[in-house]
Image (cartoon, rainbow, N blue to C red; front, side):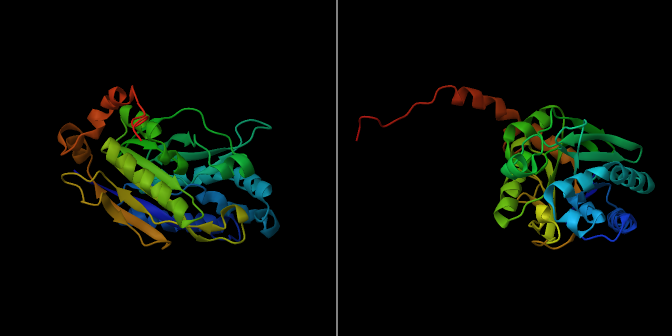
Length: 299
Protein backbone atom coordinates (compact mmCIF):
# COMPACT_ATOMS: atom_id res chain seq x y z
CA UNK A 1 0.00 0.00 0.00
CA UNK A 2 1.32 3.44 -0.91
CA UNK A 3 0.47 6.94 0.26
CA UNK A 4 0.80 10.12 -1.77
CA UNK A 5 2.65 12.84 0.16
CA UNK A 6 3.20 16.48 -0.76
CA UNK A 7 6.02 18.86 0.20
CA UNK A 8 5.59 22.58 -0.47
CA UNK A 9 8.23 24.77 -2.05
CA UNK A 10 6.53 27.81 -0.61
CA UNK A 11 6.98 31.48 -1.55
CA UNK A 12 6.38 34.25 0.99
CA UNK A 13 4.01 37.01 -0.17
CA UNK A 14 3.21 40.47 1.13
CA UNK A 15 -0.44 40.09 2.05
CA UNK A 16 -3.12 42.76 1.95
CA UNK A 17 -5.11 41.26 4.81
CA UNK A 18 -5.93 38.03 6.65
CA UNK A 19 -8.41 37.05 3.94
CA UNK A 20 -5.58 37.04 1.39
CA UNK A 21 -3.62 34.58 3.56
CA UNK A 22 -6.67 32.40 4.06
CA UNK A 23 -7.32 32.35 0.33
CA UNK A 24 -3.69 31.52 -0.46
CA UNK A 25 -3.44 28.64 2.00
CA UNK A 26 -6.84 27.32 0.94
CA UNK A 27 -5.66 27.22 -2.69
CA UNK A 28 -2.44 25.45 -1.79
CA UNK A 29 -4.14 22.78 0.29
CA UNK A 30 -6.90 22.25 -2.26
CA UNK A 31 -4.32 21.76 -5.03
CA UNK A 32 -2.38 19.05 -3.18
CA UNK A 33 -5.44 17.34 -1.73
CA UNK A 34 -7.11 17.48 -5.15
CA UNK A 35 -4.26 15.39 -6.56
CA UNK A 36 -4.77 12.78 -3.86
CA UNK A 37 -2.10 13.78 -1.35
CA UNK A 38 -2.84 12.51 2.17
CA UNK A 39 0.06 14.26 3.94
CA UNK A 40 0.97 17.90 3.23
CA UNK A 41 4.13 19.52 4.61
CA UNK A 42 4.64 23.29 4.81
CA UNK A 43 8.00 24.94 5.61
CA UNK A 44 9.73 26.36 8.62
CA UNK A 45 8.84 30.03 9.14
CA UNK A 46 6.43 29.83 6.21
CA UNK A 47 4.01 31.82 8.35
CA UNK A 48 6.43 34.77 8.51
CA UNK A 49 4.47 36.26 5.61
CA UNK A 50 1.88 37.13 8.26
CA UNK A 51 4.27 39.91 9.35
CA UNK A 52 2.96 41.85 6.37
CA UNK A 53 -0.42 42.15 8.09
CA UNK A 54 1.18 44.67 10.43
CA UNK A 55 2.23 46.84 7.50
CA UNK A 56 5.54 47.49 5.76
CA UNK A 57 7.17 49.19 8.76
CA UNK A 58 6.40 46.28 11.09
CA UNK A 59 7.46 43.66 8.56
CA UNK A 60 10.80 45.44 8.09
CA UNK A 61 11.63 45.34 11.81
CA UNK A 62 12.92 42.02 13.16
CA UNK A 63 11.41 42.13 16.64
CA UNK A 64 8.12 43.64 15.55
CA UNK A 65 7.79 41.15 12.69
CA UNK A 66 8.23 38.22 15.06
CA UNK A 67 5.68 39.68 17.47
CA UNK A 68 3.19 40.30 14.66
CA UNK A 69 3.41 36.71 13.43
CA UNK A 70 3.20 35.29 16.96
CA UNK A 71 -0.02 37.26 17.39
CA UNK A 72 -1.58 35.37 14.48
CA UNK A 73 -0.50 31.89 15.63
CA UNK A 74 -3.87 30.76 16.93
CA UNK A 75 -5.70 31.92 13.81
CA UNK A 76 -3.03 30.29 11.63
CA UNK A 77 -3.47 26.98 13.42
CA UNK A 78 -7.27 27.21 13.31
CA UNK A 79 -7.12 27.71 9.54
CA UNK A 80 -4.86 24.69 9.07
CA UNK A 81 -7.12 22.61 11.28
CA UNK A 82 -10.20 23.57 9.26
CA UNK A 83 -8.45 22.72 6.01
CA UNK A 84 -7.22 19.36 7.33
CA UNK A 85 -10.75 18.46 8.43
CA UNK A 86 -12.37 19.71 5.23
CA UNK A 87 -10.06 17.75 2.93
CA UNK A 88 -9.53 14.72 5.17
CA UNK A 89 -5.74 15.14 5.09
CA UNK A 90 -2.84 15.48 7.51
CA UNK A 91 -1.08 18.88 7.44
CA UNK A 92 2.16 20.02 9.02
CA UNK A 93 1.46 23.74 9.25
CA UNK A 94 4.17 26.28 8.51
CA UNK A 95 6.06 26.93 11.73
CA UNK A 96 5.51 30.12 13.73
CA UNK A 97 7.31 31.88 16.59
CA UNK A 98 5.28 31.28 19.75
CA UNK A 99 5.60 32.95 23.14
CA UNK A 100 4.76 30.26 25.68
CA UNK A 101 4.67 32.51 28.78
CA UNK A 102 4.50 36.25 29.46
CA UNK A 103 7.93 37.79 28.99
CA UNK A 104 9.45 34.60 27.56
CA UNK A 105 11.38 34.52 24.31
CA UNK A 106 9.56 32.65 21.54
CA UNK A 107 10.06 29.10 20.38
CA UNK A 108 9.82 27.96 16.77
CA UNK A 109 6.73 25.70 16.70
CA UNK A 110 5.39 23.44 13.96
CA UNK A 111 1.88 22.11 14.61
CA UNK A 112 0.40 18.96 13.07
CA UNK A 113 -3.26 18.53 12.12
CA UNK A 114 -5.22 15.54 10.90
CA UNK A 115 -8.73 14.84 9.63
CA UNK A 116 -9.86 14.63 13.25
CA UNK A 117 -8.25 17.89 14.36
CA UNK A 118 -5.04 18.93 16.05
CA UNK A 119 -2.60 16.08 16.69
CA UNK A 120 0.20 17.98 18.46
CA UNK A 121 3.27 20.12 17.88
CA UNK A 122 7.05 20.01 17.81
CA UNK A 123 9.31 22.89 18.83
CA UNK A 124 12.67 23.21 17.13
CA UNK A 125 15.37 21.97 19.50
CA UNK A 126 18.60 23.11 17.82
CA UNK A 127 18.89 26.84 17.14
CA UNK A 128 21.06 28.25 14.37
CA UNK A 129 23.42 31.13 15.13
CA UNK A 130 20.96 33.58 13.60
CA UNK A 131 18.18 32.32 15.85
CA UNK A 132 20.42 32.38 18.93
CA UNK A 133 22.20 35.68 18.36
CA UNK A 134 19.74 37.88 16.43
CA UNK A 135 16.23 36.44 16.69
CA UNK A 136 16.70 35.18 20.26
CA UNK A 137 14.51 32.16 19.65
CA UNK A 138 14.50 29.64 22.50
CA UNK A 139 15.26 25.95 22.06
CA UNK A 140 12.32 23.62 22.43
CA UNK A 141 12.28 20.91 25.06
CA UNK A 142 11.65 17.27 24.19
CA UNK A 143 10.71 15.28 21.11
CA UNK A 144 7.45 13.64 20.06
CA UNK A 145 6.41 10.92 17.66
CA UNK A 146 2.89 11.34 16.31
CA UNK A 147 0.46 8.60 15.32
CA UNK A 148 -1.31 9.89 12.22
CA UNK A 149 -3.60 8.55 9.53
CA UNK A 150 -0.56 8.14 7.27
CA UNK A 151 1.78 6.50 9.80
CA UNK A 152 4.09 7.41 12.65
CA UNK A 153 5.70 10.77 12.09
CA UNK A 154 8.62 12.65 13.64
CA UNK A 155 9.51 16.29 12.94
CA UNK A 156 13.06 17.63 12.49
CA UNK A 157 12.80 21.37 11.91
CA UNK A 158 15.52 22.58 9.54
CA UNK A 159 18.79 22.65 11.57
CA UNK A 160 17.49 19.75 13.69
CA UNK A 161 17.94 17.51 10.65
CA UNK A 162 21.71 18.07 10.75
CA UNK A 163 22.02 16.26 14.10
CA UNK A 164 21.81 12.46 13.79
CA UNK A 165 20.80 11.69 17.37
CA UNK A 166 17.57 13.68 17.10
CA UNK A 167 16.25 11.68 14.15
CA UNK A 168 17.61 8.48 15.68
CA UNK A 169 15.64 9.03 18.89
CA UNK A 170 12.47 9.68 16.89
CA UNK A 171 12.92 6.56 14.76
CA UNK A 172 13.77 4.38 17.73
CA UNK A 173 10.49 5.62 19.23
CA UNK A 174 8.65 4.41 16.13
CA UNK A 175 8.84 7.16 13.49
CA UNK A 176 8.87 5.90 9.90
CA UNK A 177 8.43 9.32 8.28
CA UNK A 178 10.53 12.38 9.15
CA UNK A 179 9.13 15.79 8.26
CA UNK A 180 11.82 18.39 7.59
CA UNK A 181 10.35 21.89 7.19
CA UNK A 182 13.15 24.33 6.35
CA UNK A 183 13.97 28.00 5.81
CA UNK A 184 17.45 28.83 4.52
CA UNK A 185 18.82 32.06 3.08
CA UNK A 186 21.53 30.60 0.85
CA UNK A 187 22.16 27.69 -1.49
CA UNK A 188 24.75 26.41 1.00
CA UNK A 189 22.25 26.54 3.85
CA UNK A 190 19.70 24.61 1.82
CA UNK A 191 22.35 22.05 0.89
CA UNK A 192 23.21 21.46 4.54
CA UNK A 193 19.60 20.68 5.39
CA UNK A 194 19.13 18.61 2.23
CA UNK A 195 22.21 16.51 2.99
CA UNK A 196 21.08 16.17 6.60
CA UNK A 197 17.60 15.00 5.59
CA UNK A 198 19.01 12.51 3.09
CA UNK A 199 21.49 11.19 5.65
CA UNK A 200 18.76 10.77 8.25
CA UNK A 201 16.67 8.81 5.73
CA UNK A 202 19.71 6.63 4.97
CA UNK A 203 20.69 5.96 8.60
CA UNK A 204 17.17 5.26 9.78
CA UNK A 205 15.92 3.57 6.61
CA UNK A 206 12.88 5.81 6.52
CA UNK A 207 11.23 8.54 4.44
CA UNK A 208 12.25 12.19 4.91
CA UNK A 209 10.08 14.96 3.45
CA UNK A 210 11.67 18.41 3.06
CA UNK A 211 9.57 21.54 2.55
CA UNK A 212 11.46 24.84 2.11
CA UNK A 213 10.57 28.49 1.75
CA UNK A 214 11.64 29.74 -1.69
CA UNK A 215 12.24 33.05 -3.42
CA UNK A 216 12.67 36.66 -2.32
CA UNK A 217 10.74 38.55 0.34
CA UNK A 218 12.69 41.81 0.46
CA UNK A 219 9.93 43.46 2.51
CA UNK A 220 10.87 41.29 5.54
CA UNK A 221 14.63 41.21 6.31
CA UNK A 222 14.09 38.25 8.64
CA UNK A 223 13.27 36.04 5.63
CA UNK A 224 14.34 38.17 2.68
CA UNK A 225 16.16 35.43 0.75
CA UNK A 226 14.97 31.85 0.56
CA UNK A 227 16.67 28.95 -1.19
CA UNK A 228 15.49 25.41 -1.68
CA UNK A 229 13.70 22.69 -3.51
CA UNK A 230 10.95 20.53 -2.04
CA UNK A 231 11.82 16.84 -2.04
CA UNK A 232 10.99 13.40 -0.71
CA UNK A 233 13.93 11.16 0.22
CA UNK A 234 14.39 7.50 1.12
CA UNK A 235 17.35 5.20 1.71
CA UNK A 236 19.28 4.30 -1.45
CA UNK A 237 18.62 0.58 -1.20
CA UNK A 238 16.60 -2.22 -2.77
CA UNK A 239 13.20 -1.01 -3.89
CA UNK A 240 14.18 2.68 -3.59
CA UNK A 241 15.62 5.04 -6.22
CA UNK A 242 19.37 4.67 -6.61
CA UNK A 243 19.80 8.34 -5.68
CA UNK A 244 17.55 8.12 -2.63
CA UNK A 245 15.42 10.89 -4.18
CA UNK A 246 11.81 9.87 -4.76
CA UNK A 247 10.84 13.27 -6.16
CA UNK A 248 11.96 16.90 -6.07
CA UNK A 249 11.07 20.30 -7.49
CA UNK A 250 13.38 22.67 -9.35
CA UNK A 251 15.55 25.03 -7.30
CA UNK A 252 13.49 27.95 -6.02
CA UNK A 253 10.47 26.92 -8.09
CA UNK A 254 7.25 27.34 -6.10
CA UNK A 255 4.84 24.44 -6.04
CA UNK A 256 4.16 21.01 -4.64
CA UNK A 257 6.49 18.02 -4.78
CA UNK A 258 4.39 14.85 -4.88
CA UNK A 259 5.65 11.31 -4.24
CA UNK A 260 4.21 7.91 -3.47
CA UNK A 261 5.70 6.37 -0.33
CA UNK A 262 5.33 2.88 1.13
CA UNK A 263 5.69 2.19 4.83
CA UNK A 264 5.77 -1.52 3.98
CA UNK A 265 8.97 -0.78 2.07
CA UNK A 266 10.36 1.12 5.08
CA UNK A 267 9.67 -1.91 7.27
CA UNK A 268 11.09 -4.34 4.71
CA UNK A 269 14.27 -2.26 4.42
CA UNK A 270 14.76 -2.17 8.17
CA UNK A 271 14.17 -5.92 8.45
CA UNK A 272 16.05 -7.13 5.38
CA UNK A 273 17.74 -4.34 3.46
CA UNK A 274 20.80 -4.66 1.26
CA UNK A 275 22.44 -2.83 4.16
CA UNK A 276 20.87 -2.42 7.59
CA UNK A 277 22.08 0.79 9.25
CA UNK A 278 18.97 1.09 11.40
CA UNK A 279 19.59 -2.32 13.00
CA UNK A 280 23.37 -1.99 13.05
CA UNK A 281 23.45 1.48 14.63
CA UNK A 282 24.26 0.23 18.18
CA UNK A 283 27.43 -1.46 16.92
CA UNK A 284 29.03 1.98 16.58
CA UNK A 285 29.41 2.19 20.35
CA UNK A 286 32.06 -0.51 20.41
CA UNK A 287 33.89 0.96 17.43
CA UNK A 288 34.18 4.42 19.00
CA UNK A 289 34.85 3.32 22.57
CA UNK A 290 38.62 3.59 22.08
CA UNK A 291 40.23 6.05 19.69
CA UNK A 292 43.99 6.18 19.29
CA UNK A 293 46.19 8.70 17.51
CA UNK A 294 48.34 6.63 15.18
CA UNK A 295 51.67 7.53 13.65
CA UNK A 296 53.28 9.40 16.55
CA UNK A 297 57.03 8.91 16.65
CA UNK A 298 57.19 7.33 13.22
CA UNK A 299 57.93 10.45 11.17
